[in-house]
Length: 395
Image 1 (spheres, rainbow, N blue to C red):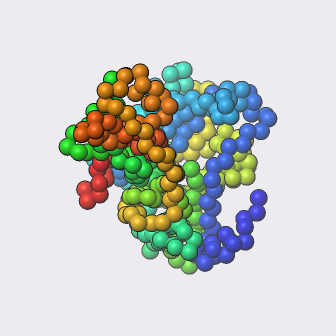
Image 2: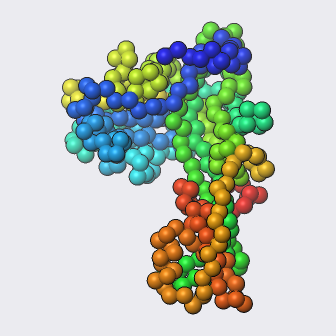
Image 3: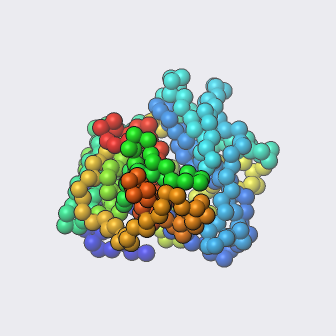
């Protein structure tokens, strides 16, 4: 699939002759994968200088598709640890419902000169190991953004420079978190049998937070450049009409420097996602990664785990006042007596309505569409992230 000329010109203008690949992961399943099942898939890198996660899943055959989506098997009960050449082990701290094993052994001062491997002991009795690898230097990075009123978008840029020239192969991942508010604040709510006012005049389910991880593979190779420098590389953009930038927005970017083998594997994965299919599709050039089943060499595994000193930074953007996000028209309020039967109130809830205001003098409550009142209907939760700036609203 050829790259659009407009994108090529932009590419040359930003990174000069550097090679950059950005692709969205679009599912594609060829017929030969109908019976492909139970292949362990490992995602992540070992970081010696800070927290990192290793996600472990298993492939599922296409026959398990339901409503057009595949049921991914999550591997949450494995014994996963990092080991160095001397036999010292570093265990994970916790595991999430998504199969992410969370580590942070930076406080134990692991040697930068040592070689490390990831070991997975699965519940089926098999043991998987990666090749031993030495950590790579990672240059620093800076993040910035631009509000483009012509293109009606916010663009996120990364800058990186390694004076030593040792980095060369760059890989970025990011996650984003944003808050948003409901279309109409509610100062009352339905509580099982009746409508109650909120305490301290605090709006009910007015502000929610949501987040998601990147679905892109972002790679840059700078070996053809005179300097090992990345200048104003756009790694993400969001249109003004997106709910993510109606209030406040945070992007958490991790930069990892890869060696040539790891870079080729990730480029291969990018091609697989962009040109062929998803992670479970056949890999171009038959690159299988660096993880192997040592108890049964005939068992296939997918993944490439590097050892690195990743650099992680967060960028916060106040988006209040940006134009573009369109709110839906709301119908006139429905007015119900405060003495209304419970069955009537429950019927209103079932029809997609919620109360938002109480008039004590008139002894009535005002109702409107729940999706315009309850921020949770847009996918988020009223849970404030621990890192949220104190100067931004928390409810």
